[in-house]
Amino acid sequence: MRIGIIGAGALGGTFAALLARAGHEVEVTARGAGLEAIRSRGIRLSGGYGEAHARVAAGEALTVRPDLVLVCTKAQDAEAAISANAALIDGVPVVVVQNGLDGVDAAARLLPRSACMGVLSIIAANYTEPGVVRVTTTAASYLGRGDGPADDECRRVAAILSDAVPVIAIGGFRGAQWTKLIVNMLNAVPAIVGRSVQDVVDDRHLRRVVTASMRETVRVGIARGVRFGSLQGLGDRRLRLFARMPLAVGQLLPRLMRVRMGSVPNLGSTQQSVRRGQPTEVDFLNGVVVREAARAGLSAPVNAALTALVHEVEASGAFLPASRVLAEVPA
Ligand SMILES: NC(=O)C1=CN([C@@H]2O[C@H](COP(=O)(O)OP(=O)(O)OC[C@H]3O[C@@H](n4cnc5c(N)ncnc54)[C@H](OP(=O)(O)O)[C@@H]3O)[C@@H](O)[C@H]2O)C=CC1
Ligand SMILES: CC(C)(CO)C(=O)C(=O)O
Image (cartoon, rainbow, N blue to C red; front, side, top):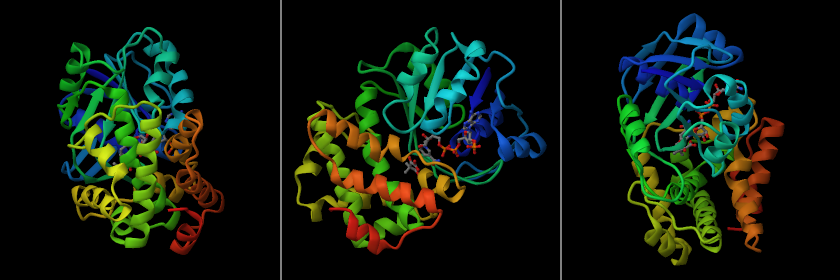
């Protein structure tokens, strides 16, 4: 099958290399140093899915109409990246592999004739240098759209992507995006202090902050009428319980996520952007919690403080001491 991948960075590079290894004809888009590296040396993947070296067609935009498209940019880049390919891909099934709540809806607006779906990935992929990706955690990914049950198109596309990595078609996708948002509360603190996700969760002071941001996100979701979808055994009932537990007991949740992440240090996708000197996705992660809280007439002080600290690190390029997080985040 001909598969177009828009944004061959950490996750896009992982899917591209593994789908090519499975025998699909893959074309990718990238830009700048990443594009140059992929054109001259291909994509080199290592880590949890083994070694793969994919020589794939690469350009700033796709050149051949594919049978399936994956959009794998950060949320803030998706609109420009999809628009650059819209004339070629409108009408082709599109899978948005992205964190945050907006990706699938944004794609559907830009590509009115395409069936647009989303993938929530728990894989941890570190884009160590242009064209080079190391997978530090392997995990199943979850594919769906809307609020209803998984449909035949989702099951068909999940089966194709499962040639590369296990992809499960799920119902209640919008609620599952919220569950993934709670998992992504693992991103901000490591991006602020410049340490791995595992290291931050192992630090009892910083873990308290991560836990508080997760609980605040659950409470905002509840206020917005969300029914949290199931990901990795984490679903609506457990999350509601988690938001009511004493904070000290609630810290078991990030610890469980850390155990699942394994021992190879994972920076998280937000810190990777900081280290590359690029804008982060924080406005679509912690920032969306603040916006959703405002819609419910609430505030989200923990997520607001984390968003501001990530922006400070983005602007200065210098990580902050843990003491700043502990002093400024009302956990
Ligand atoms: N990395 C991970 O472990 C995980 C990431 N995610 C989510 O997956 C999504 C992708 O993240 P990730 O793979 O880390 O992101 P990366 O930043 O590593 O990759 C995105 C790629 O898209 C490229 N890009 C951006 N705009 C364009 C454009 N207009 N045309 C062509 N290429 C473009 C970027 O190029 P450039 O470098 O020049 O910006 C970059 O190479 C995010 O929503 C993230 O939160 C989810 C789970 C895990
Ligand atoms: C699951 C996790 C935390 C993996 O790193 C992720 O989604 C991210 O880094 O954005």
